[in-house]
Length: 271
Image (cartoon, rainbow, N blue to C red; front, side, top):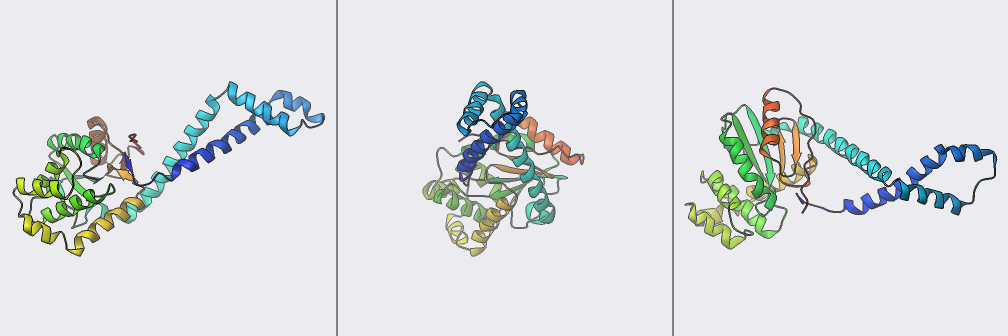
């Protein structure tokens, strides 16, 4: 999963250090040997530190368990915040008239994707989306351009939104996803010509401030929904952050169709 920021890594290490101290303190307080020694003079600070160190070296799984619990709480908190935003801004997410739509425009279930054309995981999951769409005539797909991987991505996003004005968005979108290597201005315009777009009109429409405003709006909306990388999906009231497989995707689609909450889904793909 391509991330918009990696600022959280120092925080993780700080939390790990705090957990080391906290876990050691908890053990020390509960240790029977410590309980028996309460009436005795306190051990020197360096002795306390040594005992904590020895315990953690002998039981490193304690730290792993603590970090896993912390991560689970983070995901749960973010998911709760994102659900609140989704409820308040559902029209922007599912029914923005400026967002291109694929699949069945009148479908009973909507899957929203935030993506970047230069994200390899977005390209990987594109075939999964196509398979899900082919097998579900009631699926509506909303595309949210989220160009976070440089100027080439921004140019491609603008071109795709301009292609929508020529009624060729989905075809052009798929061609960009199928491109070899990173897309840039030259390759984007070449692909546009191959799919039969009016390239001169495309370049002119790309300059419309409304297109940049659409991209800016997607970036702000993604942040509000705690979607910090690509791809990111909203299916019903569920979130998938990262690439996923067909079984997971269709399961969430079915849950949305049946009005059942599947619970938070956090799929992280390493860079």
